[in-house]
Image 1 (cartoon, helix red, strand yellow):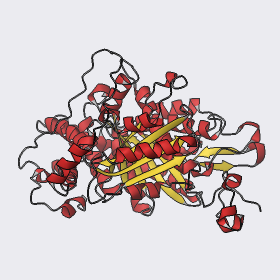
Image 2 (spheres, rainbow, N blue to C red):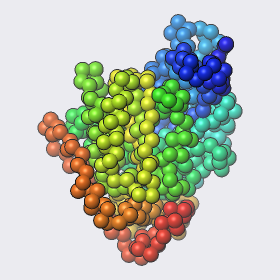
Image 3 (tube, rainbow, N blue to C red):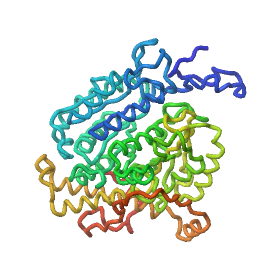
Image 4 (cartoon, rainbow, N blue to C red):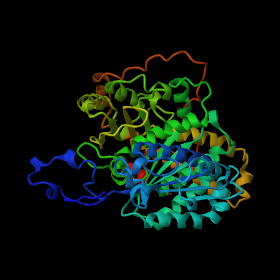
Length: 528
């Protein structure tokens, strides 16, 4: 029987009784039609991450990241058609990323063109000359409107080549003008035109440690309003936490943007591995399936993640962490790619994606079972714990784990951003930049209120996650705490910005009122 990549076949077509089925004989073929995933990158940071991400995917699949071809005409590894489209046949075949890159200024995309050879379709690399100037309104209401038709036309073309669209991933930083403004506009347009396709926004949140735009709090709050209404899920990468991880775990005194992007690339490669390679018991985990398990309510769709082992890249070939230690380290507060304390909140849902040597599976299962008993889960979702195994290792680690969690502590990250927003807006600092581009004070106030309502939704979910206070006290006293992080090698002094719970101005925003009389369903289903 001839089986081609991408064909839909039944197990009964391959063998008689199920006991006689030899999985290893067909492990390089698909047992179901592949879900094609598109990646759209917007703005300077989004496109820099996309460039690093696609290089990693090419290396994992055995594709040359400059020629888009495989050596000696061999076929790529794994389910390559999930993220690549094939052009040509035989040894001259090219495997082109399903990617669309957009920026309102040309420097980053010009650099990508100069360093990636013929990997990307040139028509999918879209730029303008003027830039957004760090202004959400320019990307959302000004220059972004002019480039939107061209960007959508290229996305339509990529979708037309897909057998089955499993989802769309959007990479963007929501502190800048293009990533926040045009990124929000593009997500709105995609969701309106293709409501059936799930959208995962991978949003980089700003930090004073790596800040380049003084108006980042404005741009971030405005973008959150769109992500809350139109994205099916938003995976946040908080520069505050990434900077701290690179400083303390990698020993880099002054982490650069490239260092932070490398951390993000590691996490994204692990997150998409089950979509690109066959795994244990399941052929693939699609983006749709992943989001179905992680998003319990439409408004509660902001996710955080981490990666293990967090070994410095230059040491990964010489030092290997045990699987139990890796899983234990992922749930420590200081390992999260979000500047908050997840163990002090409630885990609404969790996905642990393991890749690498499969002989460690029993130890991994035992370690996850032990951790699960100590996690502060919410009583109304007691079984929200998804596990995935992929045999294919990454390019830097023989085995690794990615944790994606929907945790109520994500509201602390938003509180920090909103607090910085309030300091600017109360004095109308830089407000004229946005008002002159067509935004109104009423619109700005409504977006800030929407962000506060998002924070309030997670607070209520946290408060209602415990059936009663006595049960929570019993859980905390009867289960051992996670082992503390080992003391790192002494490094230059660095004090991250405090993550606090700001007290909003009473009555200033409607969404900032007390939640004591607000029902959970009212908050989590309210979408502005």
